[in-house]
Length: 249
Image (tube, rainbow, N blue to C red; front, side, top):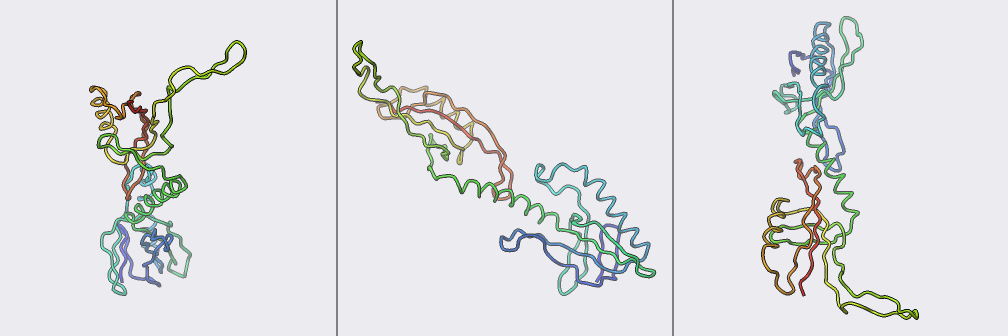
């Protein structure tokens, strides 16, 4: 069995290198390769040099969660051992090389991790954190505006333009105004189908036509804030929107 890490190579391992790190019960694990063996001083120097070269570039990479890409990696090849092998696999160092003198050799260890799998775990962990937070929120349903679907984060139904109550000069209550009220929907939530541009188009189209009785008519324009979320392991922008609509009597 021969292990090659960049320009470093050795066939003097004292343990099989294949393993995993992470939380197995959730599947959030990534392949690791723990290199442990006796190296000549020249091999040890090459291994340390490969680590230093990788580190000097990796440390300048953009934050992995922000970029969503693996960034700087080092190539790992392991010839077949126990019917397992990898060839030219892009990896990160999970633990830097360490070594102790063992006679004329250096007893060295280093651990690398499959960069693509580690990134997948990182993104999926962040996604699960968001899902756990949202699991504590009540299910308020959705509302459809044209073909755009908004998942509600607040109850939307309320009333406005109802009667007023005042006092006479002698301190007796009396009611003024209509004995009815408009049904109003104060819609707040995030767009789960369609885009914010679609919602603006729906608003423009709706206010350009005379509303029919019982139809819902927007009485305030849409507004939005944006946040980056991870869904299915992919970063995307989610729009949190608000708009108020009134039912025509």
